[in-house]
Length: 194
Image 1 (tube, rainbow, N blue to C red):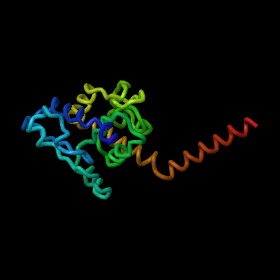
Image 2 (image 1 turned 30 degrees about the vertical axis):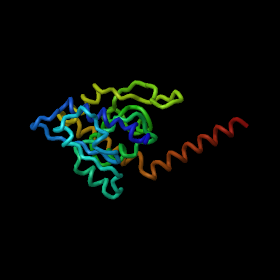
Image 3 (image 1 turned 180 degrees about the vertical axis):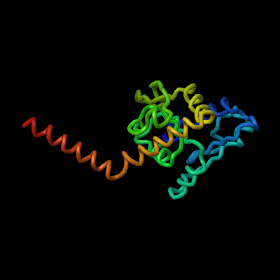
Image 4 (image 1 turned 90 degrees about the vertical axis):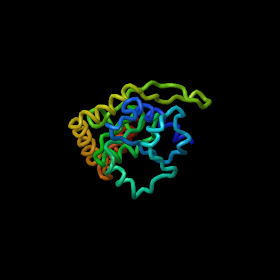
């Protein structure tokens, strides 16, 4: 399934292992939604790390997502690419510090003032056809995760700004207003060409 591949679950898990390992002093867990199984996790992952990963093979019902956002400390999605990145927008709307690749649809609403955006390198996918996708920078991912944990006030400040911006700039009314403006602009451009 292409969706699972583009989410870079392995990168996230390996980064968590490098960052926190199995230290009993660090309280963390990783929730994976709509993921195949524990057997898909990196084979060299320590048992103590595997025990901190909760996998839901099926998608979580939409009405339960707000509960998940409410109990989470952050939302991390080092993706290869998103059409829009709705889960990222939902997490920001819920007030979570959000970490994601700085490429794809989410760049319409995410920036380094309201979220943690990761650098990337465009690389060829494993699929035929010469397609490219963003390979998130693992070092920046690790640093962003540490920043959220260790710089709580900055993380909260960014999350609050992201929440405000999503609730202000992406309401149905605000989106409709922008659409009307774009249509008027297109109409004006077409009229000037006649």
